[in-house]
Each structure stands twice: as structure tokens, then as C-alpha cells.
Length: 221
Ligand code: DC
Image 1 (cartoon, rainbow, N blue to C red):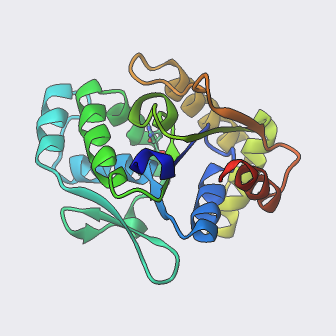
Image 2 (image 1 turned 180 degrees about the horizontal axis):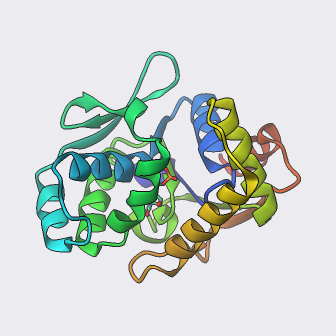
């Protein structure tokens, strides 16, 4: 049964879930499915089409005719396929990051994303990372984890990550952005970020990546 080999990892930005999910997938030889990248890729398409992001109906209609997929690439990275174009390198800009929340709060868009994600999951052996995987997309997954960390630690991690990518960042700007994203993720009406009742909660504040991967691996049989 494919749900026995679905691992759901949810949590807020900066909780370490992306790195952990990628390394865990590598270790288990599972596919790594970054669902945030799917929301980002769709946001890119809506912006390219010049859509008004407050027009939910138009967004849903566009989502219905958009092909989204995540593929693994030979170098242990992922390809984020938007209508057969790999947009992995185009979806992490601060400008786009600010716009994704408009898309993520539209119920009809989330329904299309869920459908896409469930289609991908049917092949099994996947580590899914996101905000609503354990609660909405795969509530029946065998393994569910919720990663979290203290707010200041999450801000520091985000700063470091962006600095390593060569971006000029200030702690206070990231602090403000993350507060805003947390609020939007946690208070949206549809599929807000929540720990599923049966998810294992892991506070990663004082753990390094290998320790988190080790902890999760301990639960997987
Ligand atoms: O994980 P990320 O920062 O790449 O996510 C980008 C955005 O997409 C973020 O605003 C939260 C949203 N998202 C979501 O609503 N549901 C998911 N399963 C994944 C991401």
C-alpha cells in the first residue's frame, strides 16, 4: 500500500524541514517532493500571465490548466516542472516569495495542488515536505512529522541560508518577513499550518541536521 511509504514533514519556514526532507529522501532512496516549490512555480505562472492575484476565480481556472510535477535530477536535486519547463532556479526570489501567500490561501488552488500531490504520491516511496501534508494531503500517511524551532533560531537560519546564496540580508528584515509568513501560514482559513494530532513533534532548535535526520530515521521501519 503506497501510504506505508509516504513520509509527511510539515513545519514553519526555517524549521529545517527542506534540508531534512531532502537528506532523508536521499538516505532512504525515496523521492523528495517539495510542495512549496509547486506553490512557488504556480505563482510564477500567474505572475507571467499578468493575473490579478486577488482574483481567486481566475487563479483556480489557471491552476486547472497547469501541469505541475517534481522530478528528481541526477545530482540529488529536484526539477520543478511547470508545463514541462524546469523553473527550479526561478522560484526563490524575495519578490516571488512575498506573493506565494496570495495563491496559497485560495481554496480551489489548494484543491488542485492536493490533486497533483496525491497523483505524485501514488507511486510511493516519497518524502513530502510542506505545510498541510499530514493534515490535508496525506492524513493517512504512515509517517508524519512536525518540525519546529524557536523563532529567533529560524530567523538566524534563514539569514544564513540567504547569505550563503549571496543575498544581502538584514536580521530585522528577515525577522519581519518570517513573522508575516508565519501569520499568513498559520491563520489562513483553508489548510492552515497545523501539527496533525498523530504527527511526531520535533523541536530542532538545538539539533543539527544529521541529528534530526537520525531522529526521524529511528521511527521509520
Ligand atoms: O516552503 P516554501 O517556503 O517554499 O513555501 C512557499 C509558500 O507556499 C509558503 O507561503 C507556504 C506555501 N505552502 C503551502 O501553503 N502549503 C504547502 N504544502 C507548501 C507550501
